[in-house]
Length: 223
Ligand code: DX5
Ligand code: ZN
Image (cartoon, rainbow, N blue to C red; front, side):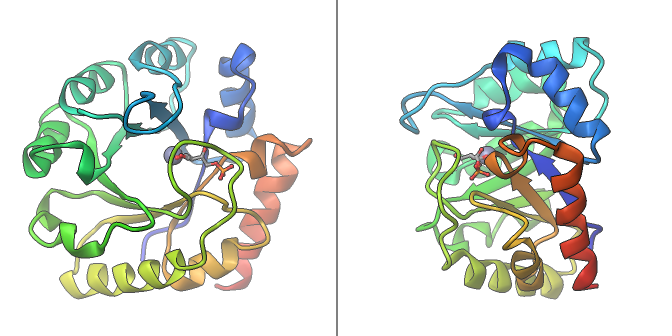
């Protein structure tokens, strides 16, 4: 099992001070930044493009940046975000006509590749692409907005996915995105997740260090 990673989602940060927010949350103990890219087409919201990822790098952010593409199509943006300094690029299988090709494209451009599965998307779409995956992201809300409640059926899916990753002996991160909080992080980890994306729980807290430390304490307690 991989070490636990906490990845604050910048979606809930103060966008007028994005560089500062990114630095602040990393100094407070975050492992990775999660950047939600929404296109008002695949999801009903519009956020940021590769310029913002590049701006974070130019600002001096060295930590891994996990780009979550909620866009359709994906291939052009994969190249643009790779050039903008992304570390992981994750997309939704429904958003690419050629999932295998899009995954290969991510690695070809030097990034780690991920698939994000919506609440109603089954694990079957992973079956023939295990060798092209570095991360699978289980959406525990419907994509598009921060601050939604965790959908409990995600826990079963996480358990099943953990069994598959173990059975296939793959080095693949199991990330969870949506409604992750200090109150449920231990339960989510117990189901088998190792990467925790949290937006509102961290950025709407007055003390980033306190909330990230509390999350780590919750994780430490389950061993
Ligand atoms: C939702 C995004 C999430 C979002 C999570 O579409 O993919 O990354 O920021 O926000 P919280 O943690 O507030 O549910
Ligand atoms: Zn996300």
